[in-house]
Image 1 (tube, helix red, strand yellow):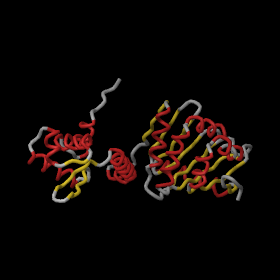
Image 2 (cartoon, helix red, strand yellow; image 1 turned 30 degrees about the horizontal axis):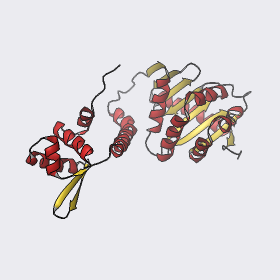
Image 3 (cartoon, helix red, strand yellow; image 1 turned 90 degrees about the vertical axis):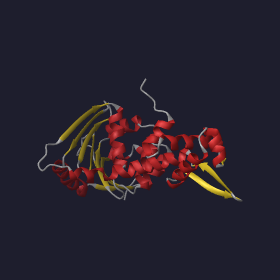
Image 4 (cartoon, rainbow, N blue to C red; image 1 turned 180 degrees about the vertical axis):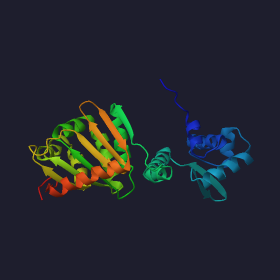
Length: 266
């Protein structure tokens, strides 16, 4: 089993000193308390506790209220901190492509990565749901790939992915077979199907006799990914010119396909 960091160690990764982390954890145990109560519980000098509490208030990790002439302190709930950290991480991921441009070398070779595990899928889902707000990703998927993908994801994992896509207003352009278009209503829970219809989703379909492709291809930013749900194989290629070529091919197919919306045909 891998090493598991303690809560105090984890807190120090977020610009919190050892002493501040200890004060925060002490407050979690006390609930709402005075500086003196924190000092007694943590067995630290009152002046030092006052100093660290002020720093924690400035970092919005501790809240301060006044009860008469007495200042009271309470720790921000861990769940609220987790939400903040998750949002900050997602926002940072959304600008990673812009930062990578700064180190890009003209004419660099494509970066190819092959992953043979379920984790490879979730890496792709995470990257897509962390795209800049309002961005677009493109997908081509066959019926077999869609069935296996929906089997691969749990209902909760699908809900989280759809919810992130919706909250970040990320647009999906999708090309699928007519057979694949009928699958979600049969395999997706009613709650997730409602979320599916809330997405910025533009779909074009082809008969399987015309589009016999059974895999899943995705393009977002400078990345083209080929996913094979049946074997959990994921191949990603990072290269702007290759991504642009994929998009040009995609746009040609998309513009010629039959418009479709889940629930009814347009």
